[in-house]
Image (cartoon, rainbow, N blue to C red; front, side, top):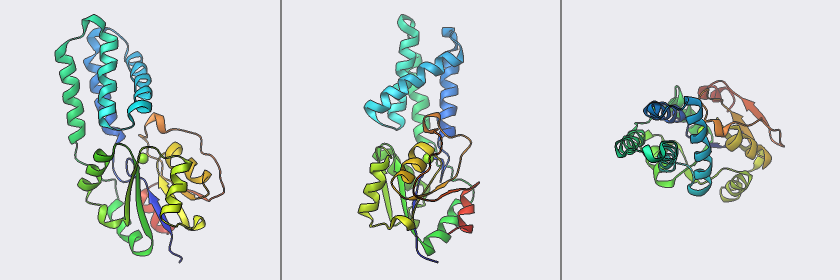
Length: 228
Ligand SMILES: [Mg+2]
């Protein structure tokens, strides 16, 4: 079989990520119960705040923590309490320290794939934070390169193709996000493997588009073995 280049997403593809954010959001909303707003409304305000902060400060735990704090201050108004702000900082700190939980079948599948193909980890987010997660995962030895980018759009994939001299027909993006992994990769002419994760972050949802490349949809990371 020909050697392919697999660009592989990390959060919610190699390890759990969004489920921990969701747990923190649940705890946060519970903290705000005394303010008397419905959980849905608090969530709505948080989502709006997050969208704004991502544009300004990018992805990552710190940007997320800022969104929680701003949401609280906005909703509490002149009833804001310092203890609640400190509790918010505490749960964000706990989130940052959460040990990585590698998804089922990932290490053995990477070990197999690395023997036959070129693997490049491609993750977006805050650089130091993502690098720390990669480090703690212990998976870095399977990859020829680790690429941390601020956003994954068609331009990002074109850049990867150029940097790593990838023949597009033999290049694949593997990930859980239609918006960041699948659609822009297909748009740039690469192939893609969509491995849905049932807890994918709402901001990553998007209709699957079609492009020049091939699209595979798999049920689990270990299923890659049957195709590569
Ligand atoms: Mg992901």
